[in-house]
Length: 254
Image (tube, rainbow, N blue to C red):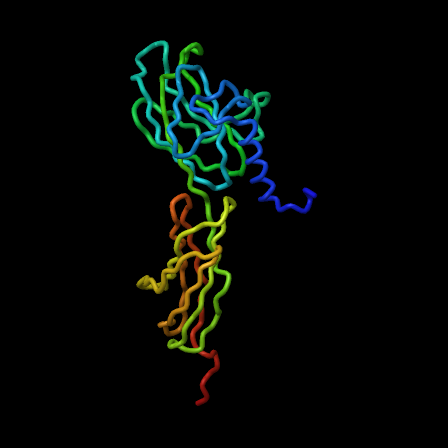
């Protein structure tokens, strides 16, 4: 049965099963990857007072996760240190952790800061906050953060003519908006590019597609750009047509 399921659906179902059974939602981080809770996007998460903490980060490839971080303490207390944050591939578990190299390393420092992480693959990544001071016995200063996620998207032209008969003709363009995280919502803006950029249409994304028809208003050739204008939770993207020729292409007889 599993062989006939789309890979993307299997990944989503696997993430749901993992999040619903083995990764409890709580504020403080776990002492290991196995006991790490899931980061709750948009909610305040607190930590510190330990040598290290782990959270699990459910993401899709290309997502942009933004952390708004608040650290406490000046770093002058010899028994405490500011946490350093790193992220680990979903394949890394507690047995492989000590030999693994984290990605997106971020020194948080004291006070408020903001940083982002973009995972190269889909799954449950591990987020690790730890003391990296010279004394391994130092504990991390208390801290808190709010994580938000914007999912990657890709917009592509799937239908447009390579030639139109006249500058007075109307042209129809169709673009598709996709994401590994689901169906993006928002608007599409269609622009004529080259020289002065001019927007010709702005239409909603419907079922993953956006379509527009408008006058060519160009002489020899023209190119168009489509811009995906996302709703909250999605990332913007653009695509451009190849040159579209104008005219019949037949030479006039002298």
